[in-house]
Image 1 (cartoon, rainbow, N blue to C red):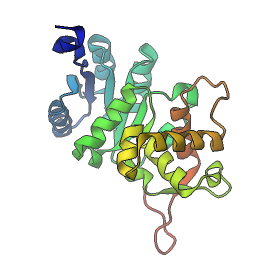
Image 2 (image 1 turned 90 degrees about the horizontal axis):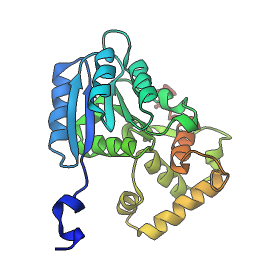
Image 3 (image 1 turned 30 degrees about the horizontal axis):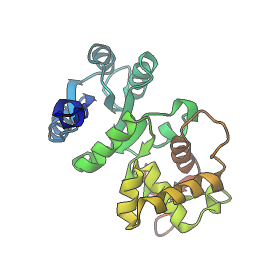
Image 4 (image 1 turned 120 degrees about the vertical axis):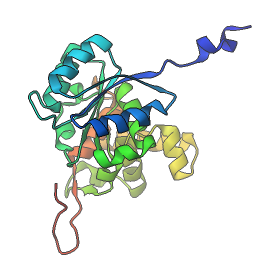
Length: 240
């Protein structure tokens, strides 16, 4: 039996996840959803921010799924920053009932790796949740697709240089899609996607400039920073 025939060698280790939320039913929903995904192992669940910080130190998760509002201090954002300070490699998936994308958009690109944001209602879609977790574990920045679909480039933003196809690819990058997944969504081959991604980097000026941050992270952040919500009919904006 060769090394690739050994299932213990070829099997990828599951992504270790800590779930943090002050609502027991939501913790249970996330735990059950993730337990059904063979690629993820839930290593713990916490109710409060400080409990999450302590548990992360003990369990060493790859990713923490963190609610913003935990009913006490520190809140989810502060607790997440404490966990990141202790272990910069850990991924953070922030979840909220509100559209809090500004937390990610405001992060400097060198510190943004491994941060994702999901609306709580999107947790019911296992693929969206798992994609956000896997993206955070890989050090990417991802945003809830339900938030992204309500965004449009700001006037005179760098995104106005992009074609409609490039914008679609960039939005999927920001949603955490890998090249293979983008290819499936667009019904094209991966080579075409890679060329499209490279053209996005080139036109946004984030390719080959010597920056330390992953260009995929920088592209996702730029999309969040250079977009605003589409106006609703009558000129009103969606509530945040």
